[in-house]
Length: 422
Image (cartoon, rainbow, N blue to C red; front, side, top):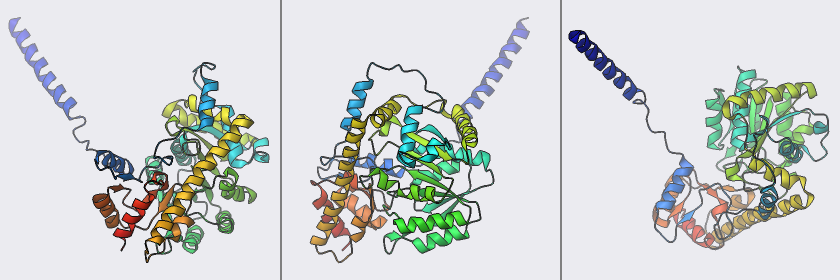
């Protein structure tokens, strides 16, 4: 008996050792993920002790004192919500009221498409979540398709469609020499793509370049995309924030609707309502008819279920409260214009200061571009000098977040840019 117990003990010991070895090796192959380039800029800025430091890397609005802003219409909406509503789960498709109001912004207040119930739409986790949900939808129902993405684009677009396992191609967009749109090459790429391809388009305030097609160019883009039977998917993260007028910023979408495209749209309230941390957005897909829209919405909800089950309630209540109340909506339109106008004003000031310094370079592109970002044309080496010599932080592609530019630092920023570009 004693021998049996001893043998049993040794077997259990060996089993424990083997088990421990397996458990300790489960994650041994995991390496640290590469740092996000934008978040890395913020970390470096925070660690810098210089009183002169400037952060023009972050993609979030700041006031002229460099402080985050909560809109007054948002504060008022929160006051109305507080203590009056429960915190029950939303349906998988999210807040019906929020989605209805959001569709009006994109498709038009009196859109026949909305009245005909041809739009499949669900609340999403801001613009990122809307893009990811669509990418998974594309993969599931068009498994052999690919997505054409502009060069350059918001870096996370590549991550989203990669993780959804949708093959990616690129199309020409930015023209480095002119610091504007490479329109002819873009049209060639649209023409040469296989029929029925998916194209990702920035509806306004292209990130990171700030370069948008003109209305005439949008009409030509729409024509060629339709001629090839392509599907246009719009990422609209800056409606209202670009020009200060949500209707003007939706012009590209309205052109495609006039031309009878069936499009998809990702919308976000991070920038235009300052609801960054609330993660509130919407995904919509225009369908043939109401029956198809019901089917598509059901499948979008089915995709959302194992991801996050249902979306957050608080931000949806803020958005629906603002957009469904005429006075609050009017206040929002006023406040979003103030934000847009400040950005536009800083573009004028930065260009003016550079020209006043006698720079031999053309800085016209600063005011030609629109939205939160300016694609400055600075090289990675020049950006490094700005950081090392002047404590100015931005991504190494030369993208300046105009939200970080203020009346207090614009002259210092211009002087530093002038120094590194001499």
